[in-house]
Amino acid sequence: MDEKFRILIAKPGLDGHDRGAKVVARALMDAGMEVIYTGLRQTVDSIINTAIQEDVDLIALSILSGAHLSVCERLFKKMRDMGMDVPVVVGGIIPEEDVEELKKMGVKEVFGPGTSIKRIVEELKRIIVERRRRGE
Amino acid sequence: MNDVERNMEISKLLSDVEKEPKKYHEFLRKIDIDELCKVDIIGVFGSSGSGKSSLIGKLAKLYRDEEKKVGIIAIDPTSSKSGGAFLGDRIRMRDLFEDHGVFIRSVSEKNTGLGLNSSIFSMVFILASNGFEKIFVETVGSGQTSVDITSLCDLSLLVISPGSGDEIQFMKAGGIEQADILVLNKSDLPEFEFLELELRNAMIQKRTVRVSTIKNENVDLLKDEIEVLLSKRKKSVGYCREKMKKRLKKHVELILFENLRKVLSSIEFDLSRYDVEMLRSRIVEDLYFMVKNEKGG
Ligand SMILES: Nc1nc2c(ncn2[C@@H]2O[C@H](COP(=O)(O)OP(=O)(O)OP(=O)(O)O)[C@@H](O)[C@H]2O)c(=O)[nH]1
Ligand SMILES: [Mg+2]
Image 1 (tube, rainbow over the protein chains, first blue to last red):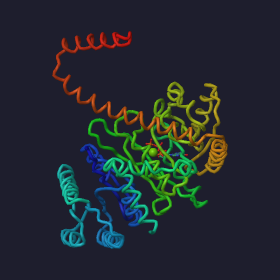
Image 2: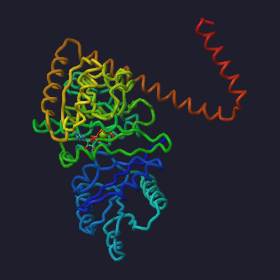
Image 3: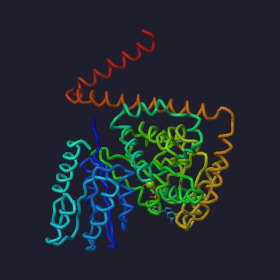
Image 4: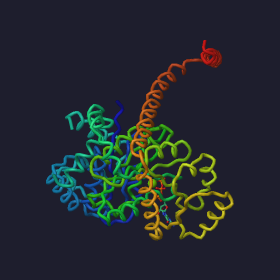
């Protein structure tokens, strides 16, 4: 059966443009994935609700505002409280020292501004395939 | 179980339609048709960008004010090249994201070319059996799509806006005939009067509501129209059984169609090795065969 990968691309926080997120969305679609796109200024609650209703395989956050630590902290806390286990990746301008911090929280992968689209696609596929293989 | 946990379960069930057909079969067997009939299923179709998602968002909000639970299935086209899809209808419904009484599921059309696929029918049944009282199904398209969507829905809206130039397209394809209500959207735009003129010239006789979704003008009026029509329809004797039969019939047709496409795509693979002469004789042979069969040979 050809099961489609479903990915939520969300932009939390107040920063005002989503060009980067759209480029990635487009590339994922070209790679055969279903991309759910929700637009700017998403709250943690709305990201979680969308992820639940759309039954996505992965949440990709695009954060340029510098709020990555606090957003992820709240997101993971909420997900834990709800017994939700969906892989999360982060893209954006993230200082080196915060990457470790994010991964400690549970972020699977962090993509900086220079990352090639090809690598993003490959990494996301790997994360999803691994999760499916583990059964759930 | 709280609302969130409930939504998690419903979401898994929706995924099961494609992932675990057996589980879905069990569900289908248990569906109570009389219960299902209490739910109103509203189809929304029209060309890309006419404002379907925005309008559904506003209508849903009005129903939420009455504490009715709302389900939304938003269909977007599948890229025929990659099989992927950009599902962006949610962007227009952001006021609803934190409301657990609204369940939005985005689906890709899956290249049926119909703006619909068999899974949509299943998903609507699932939402309808899980406490959602108003269900919207959004899809792009005209012609065949409008026929299929009207067989699924209790009522359907065709959304048209100025500048799309698709009015004539919809008429040719029978889209306007299929719709119960013609929604002329974006009445706030100056070009709107041309749209009205065009429709008047085409002498279209159809229940019509003019709205500006962005300014939230007349959306309440549209909702009243919808409610009047729905209750009239549902009161008529035998409506529910008859509707359900139509739905299931279309559901079966779509499944057959999708299976046939699978078979065809494997033949296509075979044919790619044919050269022009081989293809030519294949056509003649197949035509000969068809004609012979039609004559009862
Ligand atoms: N001026 C004006 N713009 C509107 C109105 N309603 C919707 N729009 C805009 O029209 C554009 C398309 O709206 P959508 O709701 O996404 O249209 P759609 O029919 O769902 O589009 P697809 O899902 O792509 O087929 C958006 O930019 C909306 O903001 C309206 O009443 N007036
Ligand atoms: Mg839409």
